[in-house]
Length: 338
Image (cartoon, rainbow, N blue to C red; front, side):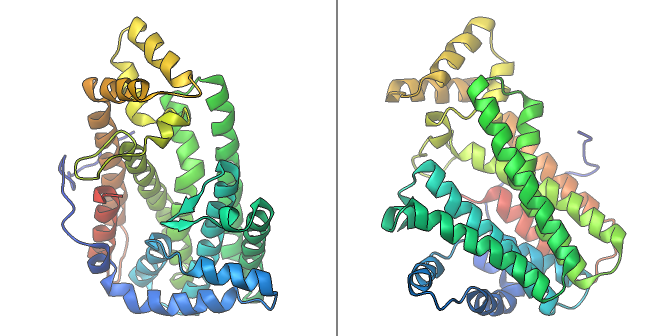
C-alpha cells in the first residue's frame, strides 16, 4: 500500500468532537431522511408493522446515511435522489444486521432484545428479506438504475466476503492479504457504496463517482480495523467483549502480532484460537500476546494510513463545500470509542 503524502492523523489521536457535532451540517437532512425511511417501509401487515415499529426505535449512529449526505453536498445540492440513496443503503444495512443476528443467535442489538429473540428466527429472516425487497423497489419506483447497480454490487460483495470468511475460519489459514480482501468485501464495500451513491445523486461526473468509490473503500477498511481493535481493548472503552476471540476470528491485531513471534509462540497462540470454548485464562493470554507483540500499534497505523489516503485523494477533487465536515466524520470514525 502506498504511503500518503501528508500525515493527517497523529498516532493516539483522541476523539475531540461528538457525533452530534460532526453530523451537525447535515442534521436537518438526517431528520428528513428518518421520515422518508419510515414512510418507505410502512406496511399494512399487522405483525410486520409491529416488528418494524420496534425496529425503528433502535436508532444507531446512522453513519452510512450521513456519508451519503456529506458526499452529496460536496458535489451539488441535496435533493430527493440523495434521500433515495440513503434509504436504499440503510435498508440494506439493516437487513444484513437482522440476518446476522439470526445466524449468530444474538440476543441483543443496540441495547434492545434482538428481533429473532423477541419473535423467532423465521420472523427475523422474513423481515430482512422484506427490507431488501423494499430497497430494490424504491430504486425501481424512482428509476434510479445507477444506484441500484451500485447497491446490488455491494450486496454481492458482502455475501462473498461472509462466505470467504466462513471458509477461512474453518481452515484457520488467515493471512493479511485474505484479511484485507474479506473486510473490503464484508464492510468496506457498503461504506464505498455510500460515498459513490452520494456522488451519483448530485454529480454527473463519472470520474468523481469512481474516486468517491475508492475513497469510501479506504474509509471502510479503516472503519473495520477500528472495530477489530476494540476486541483487544482500547483505552477508555471499558471491558471489551472479546467476541472475535471467542468466535475464533483472526483479525489484523493478531495477524500483526503473529508476524513478530517465534514458531513456537505462533503454534501456541493458534492452538488457543482453535479452541471452541476458551476460558478466561485462554482469552487473557491471547490478548496479552497481541499487546506484547505490538499488534495493536501496527493495526492502528494501518487504520490511520487508509484514512489518510482517503482524505488525501479527496483533496484532489473539485469539491463545492463540506470537505472539512467530511474530514471530521472520517476522524470520528477512526477515533470513536465504540
